[in-house]
Structure formats: C-alpha cells, structure tokens
Image (cartoon, rainbow, N blue to C red; front, side, top):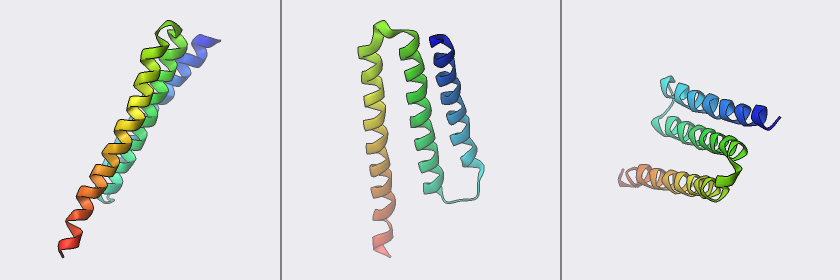
Length: 92
C-alpha cells in the first residue's frame, strides 16, 4: 500500500512538472507563465520528495529539509521576480 501511495505521489509530481511547462506555450504574459511554471514545479517537486519520503523513511531529515528549502527558495524567487518586473513600470 505504501509503494502504491509513493508511486502515486511521484506520478502526480511528474504530472505537475509537465502541466507547468505546458503553460509556457500559451499567449499570456511572461509573468503569468513564470508564475504558473514556478508554482507547478514547486508542487511537483514537493510531491516527488514526499513520495520518496514514503519510499525511504530512513532519510526523513534530508527529505524534510529539501521540502522546506523548496518552499522557501521558490517563494523568495517569486518575490524577487515580481519586484524586478515592477521596478521598470515606475519609470514610465
């Protein structure tokens, strides 16, 4: 049962990776594309790491650290991208 749940989490994570990448082909703004990609990649990566946590519970400290690092890094990157994109708008 744990193996099935683990493979399901890994499969969902891979689905999120491809789903986020598919938004790059749309006709929306660059920031929307980056936001969609970063959210989907973060959720996909966290899902894959959770699946690995179920598969290899002896490595839980490293995998939990990886999940926390992903959440913090991608959140900060989103704020930096938003700040950089909005700084050019104030000069108009």
